[in-house]
Length: 127
Image (cartoon, rainbow, N blue to C red):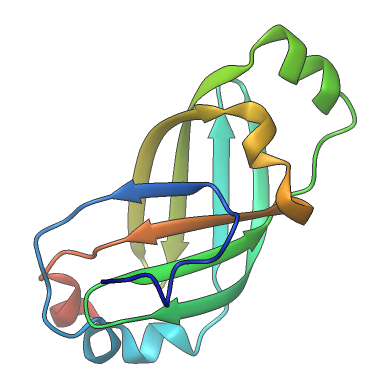
């Protein structure tokens, strides 16, 4: 089970790729580099630095800092459930996650959102 790597009390967004045997080996060099996650909500765009990375054998957790925008409370009332796209750009690689979530969850838990991802096998060749 992945319980020990799952951040407590955080909304989880997952996109399942093909199973990989050892995410640390595949992403070893990438984990040492700064990462930025861009979250796009309809016409609004928020960029965030990833503040922590934890991994197990087949899953990489990215914990990022998402601050509620100035009009955040109004957005939550107007559109409680939103479709989002989170994109990671790094070293010429790009990963996209499309998901639906409650908007308030993106900005709760001290501004932390966790993204759970299984990466495709081809990343080993590029990493």
